[in-house]
Amino acid sequence: FDTGCPIFRGTWNVSYQATQAALTAAEHVRSNGGCAYALSRPPGHHAGPDFHGGFCYTNHAAVAARYLQQATGERVAILDIDYHHGNGTQAIFWRRDDVFFTSLHADPHDDYPYLSGHADERGEGIGRGHTLNFPLPVGTASAAYLAALEQAIDALRERRCDAVVVSLGVDTFEKDPISGFKLRAADYLEIGRRIRRVGVPALFVFEGGYATDEVGDNAVAVLVGYERG
Figure 1 (spheres, one colour):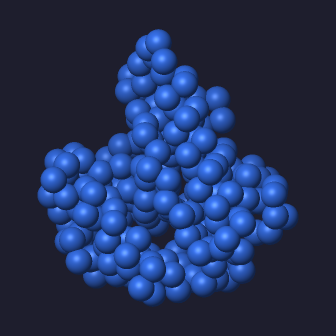
Figure 2: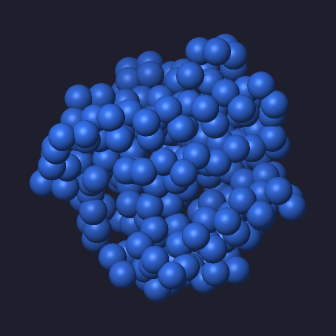
């Protein structure tokens, strides 16, 4: 759906292996509980059922969520906290009721991918009510972001999900060169803590983050926050 996914020799194999990393992490969560982290590159959440874009070729989080749901028969949710809306993930589950999808992201009036992620997008058919979006304005800082995250977590609890797949983007960071939120380094510890309060096993699948000096520290902070609870 855009020009961000040129295909070269080896493209399929690289993306396939990134999905396999997410599936390996999903199997760890299924077998052992707790949490696991998949450092999948290229990212995945802009890839849909019949399209790719935004540097995403295959949707690792969506595949992992379906694996968990099919392997366990339990209720699985996807929580997308990347700065950009996970339009591909939403499209995959738009008409399904077996995986709940909720996302915090930049208002699509303001930023990529522009055409999806509005608050009134709730799913269709049997999928109606299984999508929940929290579009936030450019300039959003920690207080407003964490308040929206708390609403998303409340939704996960209400649906009594048994596992959550987190599309982990840390491009919400205040120094990120292509994004417009203002989260600070310390906020990522708190994000992890709050996700832990869902009270179910969690699979974190890396999506984005472009402040290259801090991206690793911020991703690790989410995991540390989750582990500390």
